[in-house]
Image 1 (spheres, rainbow over the protein chains, first blue to last red):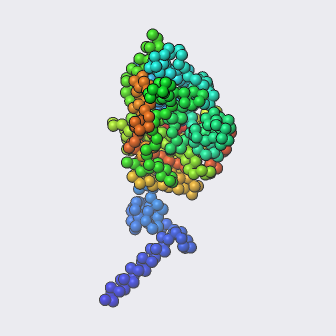
Image 2: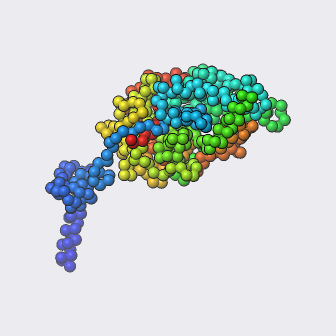
Length: 260
Length: 225
């Protein structure tokens, strides 16, 4: 009985001593690494050679050596605004890939490199619908959009593939519902709209892009209108893809939901 | 006739190109489906009026079968480039690269511009365990939040209908809501997220098209040579 009791007390004292030496919130000085932390072997309560445990410095994550980051890393992919390379960089079989070139071009050289091709692509998309509508492609062309940008200006802006991020404004890729002065001008910038301030997870960047490309001055130029009231659309629906976000978001960092 | 040819050319293009996926998902022959394939980029105020900015970069996606997905590549360096003066040359860079189950972040003045980079080993921002299903977040003494791991892919787009549209095979264009389907519903992606105090950057002198002061930002993936 007595030896057991002594052992018990001894264990308590060891435990107390351990707690004291490990506590972060007391006033005792930081434990000084002892000799076992430099002897080149894993001993005591070390979790690696001369590291970890109650007295030595923490081990590096891989247990032994700090990670190594040497070498040169060369660019293989680029992205600024969503969808730019996908929509405008469409490759033509047998020709060098525009998309690959885009991914290894620095932004300051992008407009000069890609604007002409992007503008041609923008017109080609309109020609697709001229064909489907039975119209002369020469009669169905890009129309200045809700931002008042002509085809050359729009494609110059888009060719330089960077995302605007305003540190001191609410974030929205473009919110067509905000019209602070209630002047009915929801989309044409008259100073009160908020947009181009970043990109939130829930922003409908595809619809915004479609409106800017196919919406014309009103934003709804090709939106599936039924011109003759016969119950069917006479114009294609090109200003919305019809889908909203389906992923779960979190209220806090990192905001994107757990994987499915 | 010439226009007709172009029209059919576009149709053939969409078919020949197979499946092209946005926003930057699987966008180009050289990176398509590789471990360095950028999927998406977001930058936003974490809460209205916050003095921080959150950046999220997604690489890899399992939106379609047979794509590289699931493991960050230690030979791929992710960079978030930030230009404050509007010359479209980065003034700051945030880097992320994995080692042994952790993602290491670095941030510094962009002393190296152009297409080649080295890791800014003298400017560590912090590091975080690469998460499993549940997010593990590290907050540094400097108020920086870090995350790396699999997430739901929040992008949404009826991408198959888009292919039909640009292929000239959809006279009505996109489908009305209810008939349209989000191609990315159920997909996962590998995300890194980093939230920094705006005070760690000089205020931008550049503006957006509406005259609001704004950084010009872009992300890249870079493969070890």
